[in-house]
Image (cartoon, rainbow, N blue to C red; front, side, top):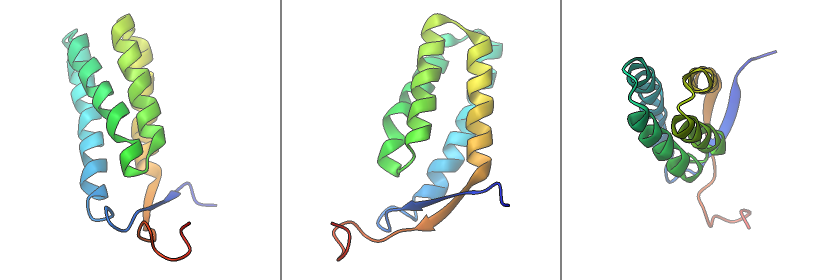
Length: 109
């Protein structure tokens, strides 16, 4: 059984998704570096960005993790943030993109 998580994305944004996901992986590294420097505001900003953008690209889990990272930064809870970043990295590693139908196409409600 595959560990992969296949996610269908709107055909209109499918070309943008690989870069979006690569940027989230880069965010994980930036968050780790910011934590090492005690820069909780930078962590909060990164989490806030993920919270706002994940759903728009079809990845509500990224939004959920971003919100939790943002809250962890507010609480200055480095251990929780490290665990959330590990969850983000594991999630990103499992994703396989499947282009979906265009919005408004017949059969899409």
